Length: 236
Ligand SMILES: Nc1nc2c(ncn2[C@@H]2O[C@H](COP(=O)(O)OP(=O)(O)O)[C@@H](O)[C@H]2O)c(=O)[nH]1
Ligand SMILES: [Mg+2]
Image (cartoon, rainbow, N blue to C red):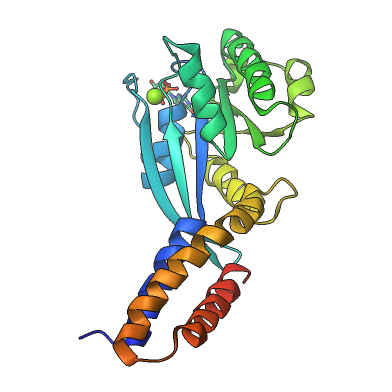
């Protein structure tokens, strides 16, 4: 039979997990290396074949600055029959990663179009972090996208060059995303924590009723104790 302390601990763990789940959408045209970047980051693997992706979701629990958080990574197909689908993906994400291949200028032209769409969707509210990733930096001699081409978008986003093939900078991109989500000025999680406070409050009350039924303590005291603990965990 679980004790009330066990139940409180499980409830708080569940709430903590929910609060720190952040969505990262990886966008860019086909064959720029989106899937390879995600696989390199998650499993340290590299596939030399290009297998077209249907939108896939991955979850990774990480610890950043001592805080546990879950990154939900959306590896997108790279093309959409319905533009509204892409807009929905952008809208739902906390962080947008725009990937192009440094050895193919046309892939950067595509990214410029998506970048405009991202700005259009977020409507200048600036609440999403935007990362611009030039992948395939190992193919230096075939480079087609030059610094001058990138400057405009790079100056308004966070620009990094990666190689999913060698692993260069891949973890650095995702580590930076995690850190920015925790502390950045556009940190949606901060807003979310406030927004979730009401929702959490109601869950705590439900949990509290359950716990208080078990050991017959007045619900109000439990409620305070639980809320106090959940807030402490939240801001650590
Ligand atoms: N040289 C090189 N090839 C890469 C790199 N990343 C991906 N590729 C290759 O590019 C192709 C497309 O990769 P994929 O991840 O499937 O592209 P996606 O359609 O954007 O998801 C595959 O043949 C990969 O092996 C990289 O960093 N360097
Ligand atoms: Mg893919």
